[in-house]
Length: 109
Image (tube, rainbow, N blue to C red; front, top):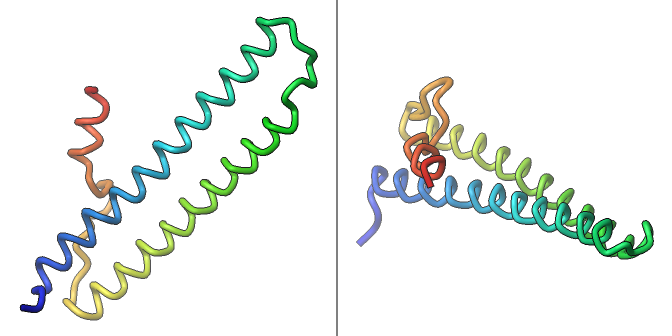
């Protein structure tokens, strides 16, 4: 049985938001790793250049995640246009982030 427009909209909305949160989570984890690597280098008395290649690669990985986040924003925008074209309206209210309730749950954790 095919999926209804309403069910499709709900699933896409949920999965898109999960993808956006996953990128944010990965950025936070990489930022914590970057901080730990630099702090460990300082605290252990290692050379200021120790692990420089790894730090550069981690920085490049963060840049890639930021680029991915930007692409997801473009996906979001494209999907809003499809939603408007297919359903005749846009369901995202202005100035209210999608998944706002999830943000509240994450902030409390």
